[in-house]
Amino acid sequence: MAVPALRAWTRRFHPAPAAGTRLVVCPHAGGSASGYRALSAALSPTVEVHTVQYPGRQDRLAEPVIDDLHVLAERLVDVVSAIPRPFALFGHSMGASVAFEVARRLETRGVVPAALFVSARRGPDVYKEKMHHLADDATFIAEVNLLGGTNAMVLDDPDIRQLVLPALRGDYKAIETYRYRPGPDVTCPVVALTGNADPVLTTPDVENWREHTTGPFELEVFEGGHFYLDDHLDAVVAKILGTLTVSP
Image (cartoon, rainbow, N blue to C red; front, side, top):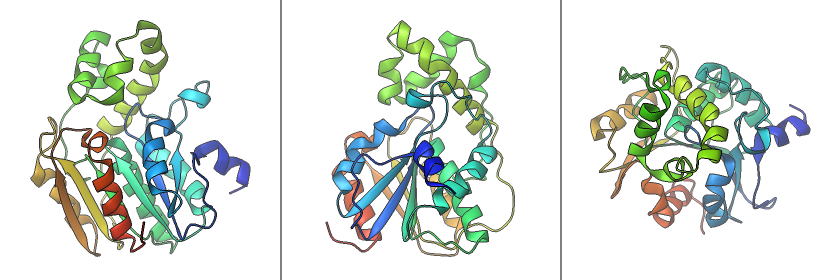
């Protein structure tokens, strides 16, 4: 993968070339790289964060949204492979499924991530019949607002709403039509993170991630909802650093 392609797909807000480990962050549905700037700052310079910028938003607004999660994962495998090792993967909500599918594909190439952090997402073969991406705007926005987070705030502005809705719908389509394909999972450690008041998740659904690694598994439950990360950034950073056995 050429360097320009890597730069097109990832953002480094706090370059740390001397860091011993990299963390590849896959954002949530409707999310963008800038939403994880605080996580990048908190981990730097011990861990260098490379945050994925999906097409169809911010500086990639003119590019078509990829609304198939398997296609998105395929596009990202070469990108992630170009990042210096060792590296780990972190995904929040939809991004957890993206990170998992990228990790699976990497391991078939003999590239084993240092760890996979799956945040605010049920296990890959726990299926819930939902097709919110097909709803009218008002119904769709109400569903997005249920989860809270940055998306809920920006959708209050009509002008911004028209800019972000296509990417948001495309991402929702990607995750709502995603189906786990049986086959080799991962061998790397998996750390599942969730909020105890998440309106769309149950702890048993999150614990399902245990079934998809032959490596160590941990479950960490925080106070809060789907975007618990906003209120527990320090604790999440500590978990990441502890798992990667590096010191802040």
